[in-house]
Image 1: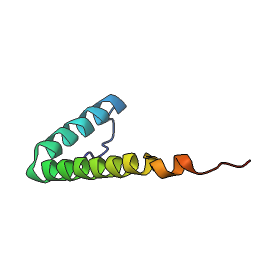
Image 2 (image 1 turned 135 degrees about the vertical axis):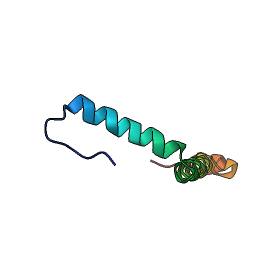
Image 3 (image 1 turned 180 degrees about the horizontal axis):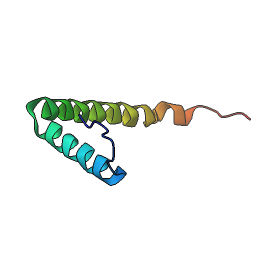
Length: 65
């Protein structure tokens, strides 16, 4: 991974970190991890949308303040 070396500029370290990330994402392990993350994000978004749905029966219940 990106290791800090004496005399490295911050820009050079950032560039190396970005290149390490690109290589990891292009690897089979990285692609699998990204696919799993996308699947979990979609599942979470689906559960969130379902939780926001209003039960039509609740619209007929009286509201008191």
